[in-house]
Length: 397
Image (cartoon, rainbow, N blue to C red; front, side, top):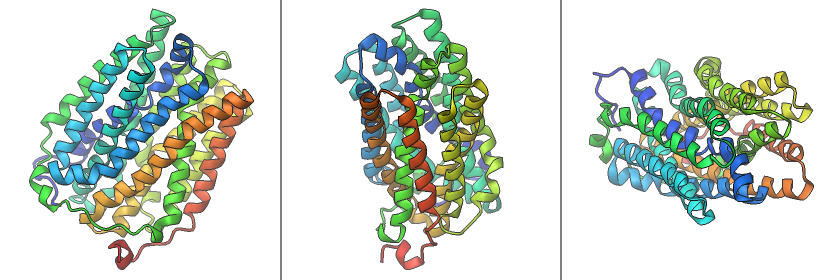
C-alpha cells in the first residue's frame, strides 16, 4: 500500500478519516445508551431486551470484521470507508421510523456491520497515511481513534436535551437528530483526497496465525466484553441515581471530551514496541475508570470515572493498531487489524446481553458494572504476557 499524495497534510487527512468511526461508532453505536432509558420505558423492554440491541449491533460488527478484508480488497480502502459510513447514516434513519423490535434490531445490525468495515478500512488507511510521517506515526493514529469521541461528545450535547424538550416517548426524534448530525459529518469524507483506491491492488488478504497472539486476542476480547457494559448502561445508572438531562449530558460529554487528550496523554506509551505492554497500561487505566461508579453516585466521582475511562478507552484500540504496525508488514495490516477487531467483536457481542441478563436476575446495575470492571482488569493483566511476534509468526508460517 502506498501513502496518499503529499498535497494534503497527513494530520488533516486522518482527522477527516476519523469521521468514519465518529459516525459508525461514536453516534451509530454509543448514542444508543442516551436513548435507551426512554426506549425501555416507551417500548416496555426488559434489560435483556435492551442489551440485545447492542448485542445485535455487536454481532453485525463481528460479521463486518470477518468480511472487511474481502470488501477492502474488492473496492479499495477509501471507497469502502465512504460507502460503509453512508450505510451507517441510512441505518440511523431506519432507527427513527419504527418502534418495531425486529426493525430496530435490523437497523442496529446494519450499523454494526457497516461500522466494522469502515473502522477496519479506516484503520488500515490511517496507518498507511501515518507512514508518510514515521516519527509521528503513533500520534497520527491516535487522531483517528479519537474519532468516536467526537460522536460521543456531539450526541451527548444533543440527545438528553432533545429528550427533555420533547418529553417521554421522543426517542425517535433523537434518532432523526443523530441522522442529521451524521449526514453533516459524512460530507468531508467524500471530498478528501485519499487517493487510496489506486492502491487497492496492494491490499492483499494474508494468512494470520492466531496462536502467537492468542493471549493478546483474549485480552482484547475481554476489553470488548467489559467496556460495552459500561457504555450501554451507565446513562441508565445515572438516571436511576436521580441524574437528569444535564447530568446525563455532562457525563457523556466528558467521555467524549477526554478523547481529545488521548493523542497527547498516550503518545509515549504507544511508542513502546514491547509486545502487549502498551495495551496493559492503557487497559489498566480503563478498568480503573470503569470501577469508580461502584463507590457511589456522587457527581465528582462520576465525572472522574468518565474522564479516566474515556481517556483510556479510545487509546486501547489505538494500542492494538500500534501492536499490528510493530509486528506485521504493511500488506498484512488490514488482515491483522480485522483479526483484532473480530476478537473485540466477539467480546462486545456477548457483553451487553449477558450483563443485561445479570441485571434482570439480581436487580442491580451496580453488580453488572462490577463484572464489567473486572473483565477489563483481567484483559489488562493478560495483555502483559504478550511478547513481540517474529517475522515467521507474523506471516502465518
